[in-house]
Amino acid sequence: MKISKDKFKKLMNKGKGGAKAAAAGSKGTALEGAAGAACAYGEKLLKANVAMARDKPWLSGAALVVAGHFIKKTSRRYSNVGAAVCGAGGYSLGIYLQNRKAAAAATPAAAPAPSQTSGIYDMPARDTGAVQFVSSGLAA
Image 1: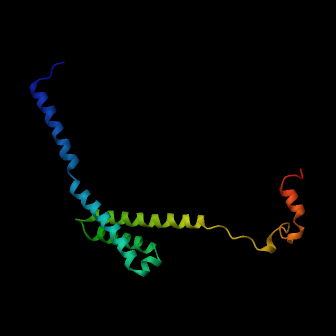
Image 2: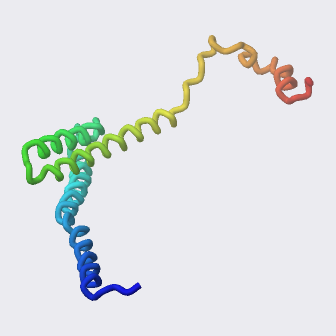
């Protein structure tokens, strides 16, 4: 199959626009990424220097979500930055919830009070011979 010179030039020119289109939003994307990094750094500083943020770890994430919402609603130019700040706040809240769930799972359950046990293991030390015999597997 033979292609004419004009058709070949058209095909070659079509490919040139793809790189421009791919790089078209790079400035906005870089700004959003910088906003997310600034939020992470600011949250770290906030937790290091403010006692209330250390006592209530969810507070910094909630503050980022609220600040991102106001940036998004008040500024047309930086609405994408507001969305990035909201995303950083949501990520912070997600990490807080994940850490809280892990801490709750790691906490061992409290042992029942002696009055709530079956009574077989509440015998004095001199009467434990039968219990040892049964638990050793020789009673079968």
